[in-house]
Length: 93
Image (cartoon, rainbow, N blue to C red; front, top):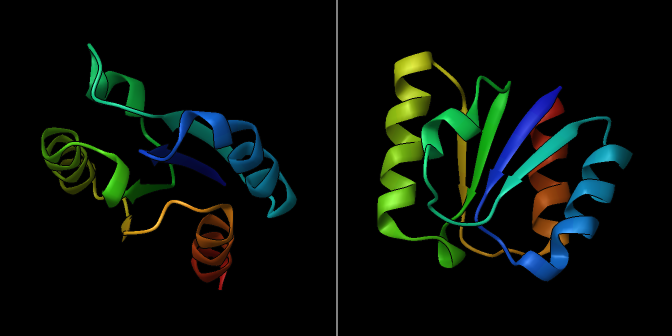
């Protein structure tokens, strides 16, 4: 399963990737709204947005991208590694 994570803390990126790998998923991290933002999202199996650490514009673009391609999107307010683990385990179930 391929998942794109939008938001979160830059310093936790290695922990996010390790937690996803433990859960059997590959993770792409995008920490902020950048040039070619929607191109960087790609076509994953799911999108997770940490809403407390991302701009409103990036959240809006992610929602539009997910809806246009029918990709499941999960909005989580906290940005901890345990929140990511919980979301990934719920995605598999």
